[in-house]
Image (cartoon, rainbow, N blue to C red; front, side, top):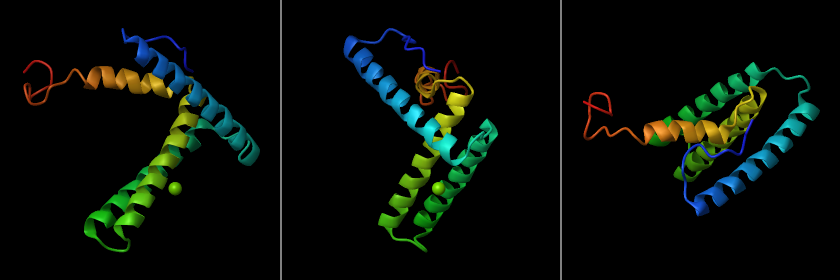
Length: 129
Ligand SMILES: [Mg+2]
């Protein structure tokens, strides 16, 4: 669930962009929820989790074959990556929604932590040594 609360002090323009992202995510969540209710009623959250795993596998496959330069052209590789990553995100939006998590807040939380790590300066733990 997205609260709309800002997780840190961000400039005004970023707040506007965040607000737009929340609106768009809310719009997507509603559409995905309605689509799933129509096509797969009473889907438990773990199926979305399994779907994320399936799409991750498809992404691995597309990446591997693209790197090996077999079975598909570079254009097909890009399309397959785009398809798998997009499907994975649809599942992730739905999984987050069913677990009362806001995907945007998950991303912001992760980035707030990851962005503080400096692996060049602190190769052991990213923060102090
Ligand atoms: Mg797929």
